[in-house]
Image (cartoon, rainbow, N blue to C red; front, side, top):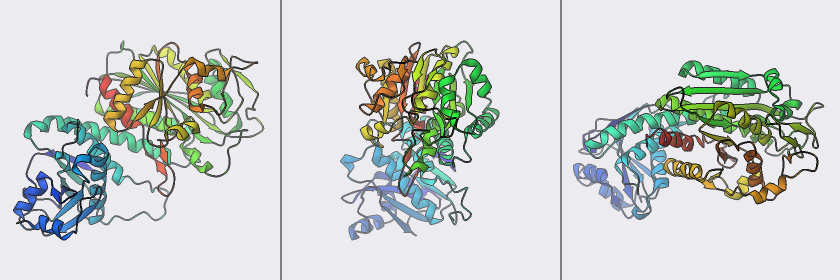
Amino acid sequence: MEFSIKNGSPEKQRSACVVVGVFESRKLTLPAELLDKAAGGAISDVMRRGDMDGKSGTTLLLHNVPGALCDRVLLVGLGKEKDFREKEFGQAIRAAVKMLNETGAFDASIFLTELAVRKRDVAWRIRQAIIAARDATYRFDQFKSKKDEIRRPLRKLMFSVERRNELAPAEEALIQGQAIAEGMALAKDLGNLPPNVCNPAYLASRAQTLAGELGLQCEILDRADMEKLGMNALLAVSNGTRQPPQLIVLGYQGARANEKPLVLVGKGITFDSGGISLKPGADMDEMKYDMCGAASVLGALVAAALMKLPLNLKVIIPAAENMPDGNATRPGDIVASLSGQTIEILNTDAEGRLILCDALSYAERFNPDTVIDVATLTGACVIALGSVASGLYANRDGLARDLLEAGDAAHDRAWHMPLWDDYQEQLKSPFADMTNSGGRPAGSVTAACFLSRFARKFAWAHLDIAGTAWKSGVDKGATGRPVPLLAHYLLQRAGKL
């Protein structure tokens, strides 16, 4: 889809459709008032008749509106004016674009981006509008023999700004929004792929392709490389599968070579059966999403590269499949990690932390400024936070604040969880340095405490995205989160926000 920015009046737009907003209680926004005035009160008449109540997310398509140069006018409900916030703004954009995509309109001029959103500037509105528009038109139908037909898909969207001096920041935000949306689309595509396609080797291949397209550095470590290094925690997870593990390392250089990189580590379990600690059969198909951490750090890397951010970035993806067979790791096995610390494996379904701990140790060789790992790590985080917020842990309070602010700016929120030493007691083992499971109490916290033991040499944060990376039910699929949070954090670090 092609996006553009313009400053103009709605009644003068020669497009297939002009989109304006209306609040509840029949209150028109300023662009809607201008159209209404040109139309001799035709829009006010529609509101008075009750054809449109202005409730959030509702739409009404009008044809042949007098005084307007466009073919159609789309009214979008915004809800109560006093309650109009980030969520309602996103709902309005999604509702508008979804309706436009069904009308056969080739292009549209959207005046919703002129709306005031409390504490948000025009750049925020443009970024979020593009992300929402791309999200509304996202489809994953490559495995369907009969595609969902759209008679004439929407191709061009123009977003309006109220004042001419807003054009420059809006144009910059347009580039940022497109880059973030592109990263989200990649993350969703990877997450939605079936596990018989998206295995560790496939992830490695996609990484190499991205490296070629975006001019990135790329290195792939295979089983022999990992054995030589002593990455036995990661290798233990892949013992029960025929799919060979991969350690994927990508690099983006946007700053001086001697500038310390930011490192993103993404959990890449392409299918998680639980191993010998087998999961229940119900909903096990959703365990293809256990690589959404890997997908999201790839998406964030793509966004950073497309935005040409002036920073250095490394992405590390430990990729493996967790399956049960005669060679599979058993509960009770003890392995030595890359760090030299030994781990008693009590539960083979607590495998994500095993691959991440070796990846965190591997990150040390890059002398990182900051390391952030992203993982669909625990069901306990879903119980704690649901699908609204990702769980955030950090060994530096300043880093936690920066990530919380980035999540707030992206409307991709996280919640700061405790990482107190008291919880470390649950990881004690009589036979090894630690266990890989602290039991059910505070399960998300003890998983983060486990990872913290491998991140003592650098500033580190952990995002548990088990509740936010995908949605279940009839609209099942990957969400692309937390690509927006990560991208906004990188924008902050690059001084672009």
